[in-house]
Image (cartoon, rainbow, N blue to C red; front, side):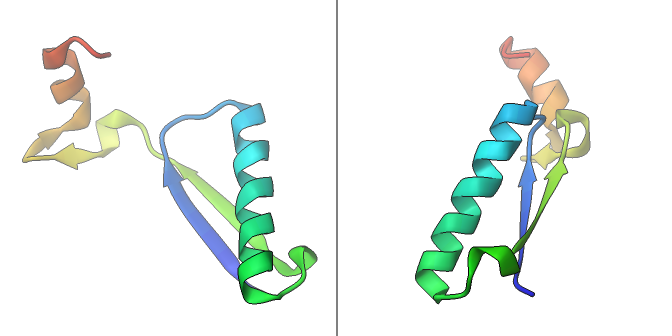
Length: 67
């Protein structure tokens, strides 16, 4: 059973459904494995759990005013 793992920021239910459908469709097309065989895991990761350039992404976004 092929598995797709996607690390992502928080997403809406609609976004998750779309990404699962699109990843599955594309992977099936490329590999010639039926779509029903694929499992997609979405790992939502908040900015407090990501480090970029030696600092938490949360702090970087706060500093830049993008949070």
